[in-house]
Image 1 (cartoon, rainbow, N blue to C red):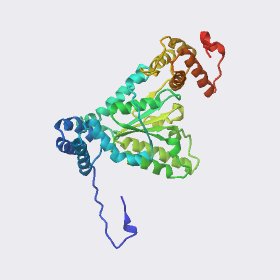
Image 2: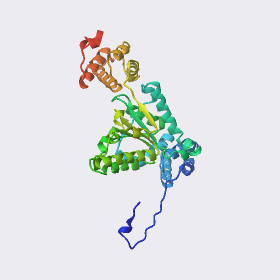
Image 3: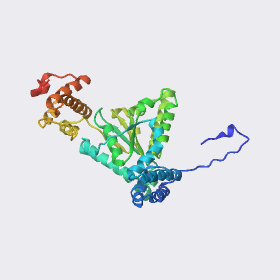
Image 4: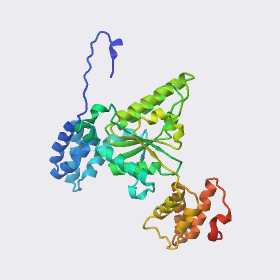
Length: 366
């Protein structure tokens, strides 16, 4: 809102608020315009678009116009097409503020203990049934916040970013990553402005926000010593407020949960801890990391690799990629020798030492 009375005192200004349509009104508009294209499209897409996007009637009408143009050119129109057109209308500004992340990962692709997998499934369920529980069943009466705030915590390379991309895919949302350490400004007040731009660009756009390095803002503070500490607390409160007001999921990620103040953690709906993979999990990761089309030799000893090398999922993924390039250069299959060579490269890159005996019967594969 703009209040120019101090500048132009000879004029009288009246505020008039024009709000975006609520869900029921938005649903009626989407059904109206999509039925003109295809009644079955309206049945499939209207509810989803009304839940995800805060479009006014003009925006919905313009979307329908673009859909009709595609239909006229012979292009098949489905729910995905509707969403793609809508996202193009709102993505330009957000692309300048955050990094879009795209992947084809599903829940089948990630290796986690059952507890964490169930948490991810529950998170998807909360998003899908958000309106029914809060609006239709009236739980909004007891909860000031309806935002889905989530904390992912765990060592580097354990799947936090991958899990965020999976959730976005399962919910049918675009995923945008924001490096919090990059937008936290040393100038008082700038961080809040940066955060405001991100949330304003994302609001009503049907996107999931993924804030990496969350401890850059949510780090523990034992006492307020100066103006910067006081303002840091304001930044934290502001970010929590925007998370709670945001109409889509917001994920905060940190490598170290102990760095996050417990008072902030309690205000988030989900906390998912990503453990460093044990031997059984590592073997599952090894077996999943090679695509079905990869020319993998049948004698790869996954059990040996999992037992002898304490590697994260990200490490294993890098090793699989390097071994694939070795095989491509030789114009052959991916062999145990190439995997062993890639493990040595990855350990060296990570600054980890190893002994020839670590490679057991494969020590001479070089």
